[in-house]
Amino acid sequence: MKIIRNSFTQDDMKRSLRTCFRDGKRLVMEDTSIHTKFVSLCQSRSMSFQEDTIEKVYEIILRKMIHSRFAVVFRRWKEEHCQKHDMALRQNLKAGVDNKKRKLTKQQSPQQPDESILCQTFIALLLW
Image 1 (spheres, rainbow, N blue to C red):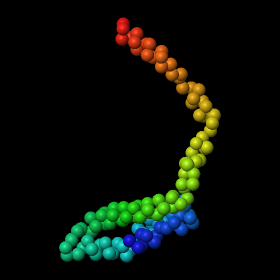
Image 2 (image 1 turned 60 degrees about the horizontal axis):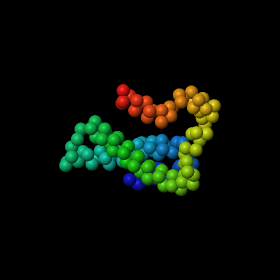
Image 3 (image 1 turned 180 degrees about the horizontal axis):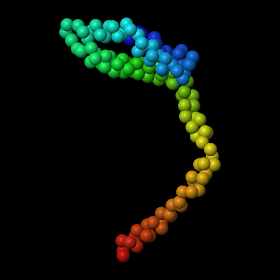
Image 4 (image 1 turned 135 degrees about the horizontal axis):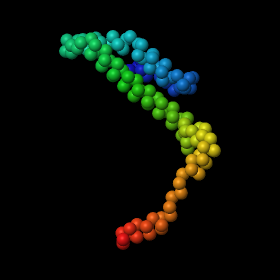
């Protein structure tokens, strides 16, 4: 667990936010000490599994461990850096959309009939 904990920190996020997840995951997945410990545990006398089964389970468990640990670090980073704004990490989404496009979609949408007209039409249909 120390290897996973040390492979991804908030300092890594400060250095390279775009590639920090991928780099940390690669460091852990390529570490042979975790793999050898896991394989030796699975091939002990109490548990004897086939080699391909061990590899599949190793990949699944290690990915889950990585994601759970990285999520904790990311949550802490987000609390420190993103709660200052109401629209954390989303502020550029609506700003990037052209206003003309939004205006055109509003103009092209058909007008909704007035609610009183709908009620009158419904009552007329019921009475008919």
